[in-house]
View 1: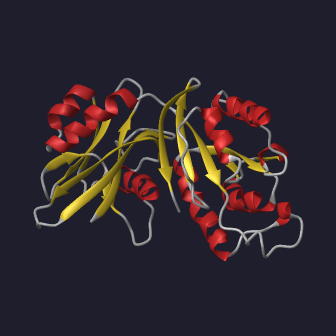
View 2: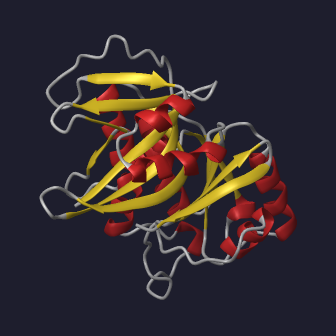
Length: 280
């Protein structure tokens, strides 16, 4: 069974815990993935369902894997998270699944958590508890083949699977609190970020410098530096040939992104704290 959840913290170091009456245990908000659901999306959804709070994700934590009472194995993917809006849980309506939701200080949480693996996860989350921003480096979705396209390559569009990939990116980018899109001016990149900006209303800025035809190392480095210092979470959509320049500007190791894949760079005050990769 696959599940996802979050270690939700707030300023001062308090941790959000939930109590499950069925097992009489204290743990982090989490739950199993719906069919076809991405773990990132599930983590945000489960926190909302079990606590009533809307969160955005920070750095990923190590996955847990343990055997349930039924004998089946369970794998849980975790992220650190911060609340968007009010963090008041006093109005949460308790139910048969969750009968208590509490903010608990860090040391008390370590004592209250029922399972050793949750205490290990809390220990891992401690140095990552401070709020970060995300720079999402995105490769455009699956496009028409270059060989089969006889027109201006900058106008080469996504194919149907690429459109589907673009739609599936909407909740993922929202989970990392992306509030602006910065895209190559080529059609296939613009189409990749369009569902997100149409859904959220966040602004998009197009750059010839992020296209295959117009990119330059100097321009890419300047843009990456400005996004790291912008104080907001952003998405940068570009092409496979331009990705090495972007990664070099970020000073992160080379990697391969499939069409529609993304690298999430968590940063704080211009310093990269953690990275994670999500393929389509």
